[in-house]
Length: 624
Image (cartoon, rainbow, N blue to C red; front, side):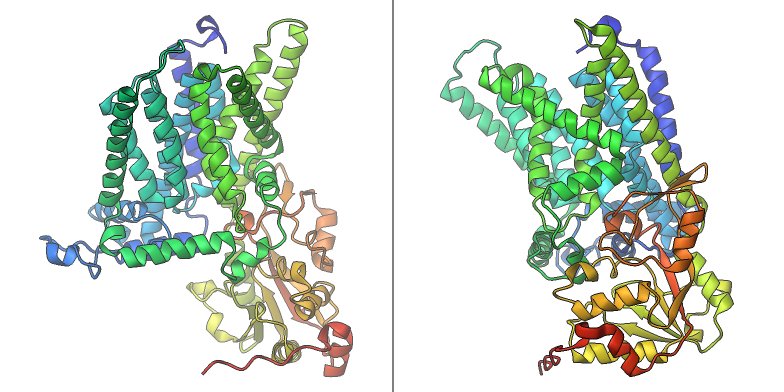
């Protein structure tokens, strides 16, 4: 830790912090209309639909309001109610200026501004945490790294609960540090309140109770090894109960129907837990079958969410801090490590839980990314301020590492926001289809994905109902009925349209479960079914003409269609391997349009499928 003399003055640190926040705001607020208001993120769409149907009767009818049938009851508890109420109230406020903001079509803008502002608040809170734990330099560096962390930039462009959750988590941790310094009832009640806000945002914040409890129980302990009597511990436990009561009351105030409509609340929370643990066989979670616990989320966080240099520095800092805490525990010197131990108690417990889940969406790691940025900044500062011999060498290494981490994360963030300069790929694909496909063309698209051309839209985007469409039940079990549906679609259709990699990156990885469908994707991508790729819409993070490509054909390995392979060979692209589906599918999916160029007979198609189409079971009879 640097001495106070080496820290920047308050004026200098304030100026630098303002510049960091300005840059962070620019990254988060740029291109908030990136999808034209079509709401391609399913969680954002669901939240907006639920929030916009909320109504608060005025004057209040308490008999109705305090019943499960209340129009203020979201009847939806997969996420907390606080983000829903906040969006509804802000939309009502904005509607007084412009009535359009009170509608679903425009309230998404209000939500995305809120998301960006809460994430901006997280950048400021990381600075405060770094300053309190270490010094102003570390705080400023941590804030700068979080400002350019790509997953935070991406999530700020959606109104989901994640950015709000991270803000309340960081605020709770900061208040817990203040409580650790001086244990007062006022500070305890404040941290209890922010814990309740976090829980009312998402119940996955529950492990946050551990650092709060540690701060209250071990706050202001004597430096010497003086035994604390049972009366003192009883007082501390009683105070901790008061903190917990405030957290509970805050939660109930912000999510009242968790109590009033407790059955729906329990069912929704239980269902989310079952989904996360893989106990429910839901099609959109099959993508995680075979992924390694802890390894998969950590690697995806390092490569895609943060960028590899920052990700490696963050996890290295986490390991170093954990090692120092263990060493202090062995030497019975934990008192000095208690502030960092509070941060570790959250980060390690949360990662231990989330990393073990079957479902590993990138956003699940968002609540610990700020602390990884903090410990990356701490590690870099340790190199920059290294003492002893050879001090000069360490400083050179420190400056090189700092420039690498800061430079690459900044360039990555700028490259990512360039996505929002272009229309969403589905808008591009819809415009192309409407312009180039004859009316009454026969199109095939896949279930569990958004169909193209889009159903919504006007003008040049209004053509979905001009075509005859067939939906392929790709996730259904491979059986003779599915084979017949698939072969008929290939024979009778003019175009096969894949909106994203949702299905073709999942099914072939489950070849034992889906042998026939896996073979279908191999043949389609290899253009052996009589269809060729005639158009694709793609958008990637890019800077100075260099695109950072999440390769959807590498894992599982699939043939790259000729048109795409040619353009990749001619363009400047870095293929970085497989990314988690949730990294790309919401704001930059790869849309593919295959056109029929040759009519194959049924016998030829069966010969192409070969053994994969043989011995399929008969479909199970439907239950009456």
